[in-house]
Length: 169
Image (cartoon, rainbow, N blue to C red):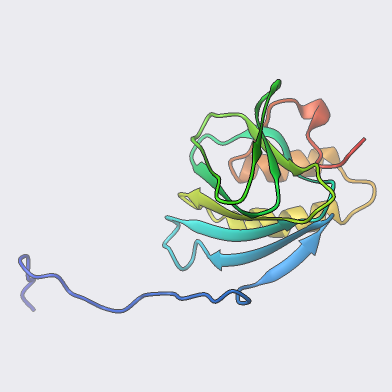
């Protein structure tokens, strides 16, 4: 068969995920729904909806080497940390783009629920990270060594390993 170098081959590979669709699970005051997965996007993009209960930590200060992260706040006030002494309050409509090698963390410091759409580019099979995180955080006590191993496997590096667990003191 002769290869056609001049014409595009079109096919429908669209994924439309509705408001209440996607794989959802909860852990430590956080609800997570997979919207666009690594499998759907050929590892190019991950889109996840996160709901943080009041006074819940999403992640302590960390960074990524090979992916960028974007937060889109859709409900409530999210506290985004971009350095040891730099915090921003993100209200609905805020878009926070966090390029690789930028330290960041996020949490809900309010008494109201916070909803965020989270994007990873490329996605780096992030769903495995979230599934492993649920397992790791579900164990009591939380094993810091196991947590760090999971973090590092999925391109997450805590800024301070002595203060990396997403729990309030």
